[in-house]
Amino acid sequence: MAAIGSSNIGFQLLKKSGWKEGTGLGAQEQGRLEPVETRVKNNKRGLGSKEPKPKPKVEDDVEKDPQKPKQDMQSKKRAKLAAKRIRKMQEEEKRLQEKEFEMAFFREFWPDNV
Image (tube, rainbow, N blue to C red; front, side, top):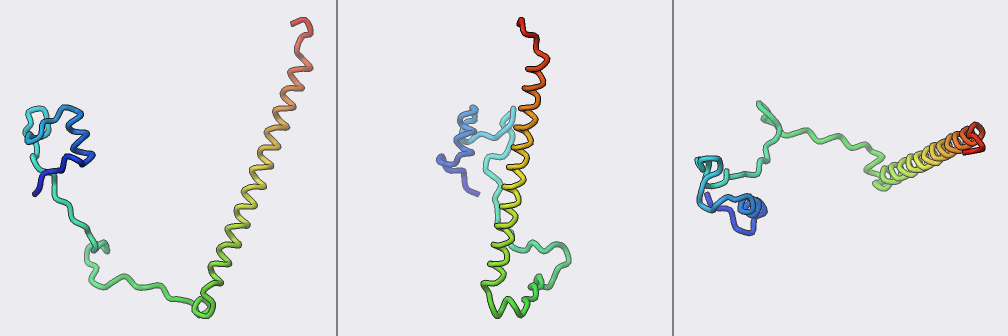
């Protein structure tokens, strides 16, 4: 295992908090001197899996016109965004109406001499 380089952010944080290079972590400095070695894990299928993950079946329409699913998805996205925009406008309008009602209500019952 190799030591952490001084440009590493973890190294810098440890130094800033009072750690001395070459000593272990912990109150009695009994911890590891070198970091735990890491590896990239590519086989993430789980226990007992011997065959590769099955690929999804592609529909015939997608093969004929690959732009169609993108267009459908974009139109759905636009419709969803438009609905969200309308809903937000309605909520804002309702909030403003409630605020105006409260102001009018308090104005009506507020004493004149105050």
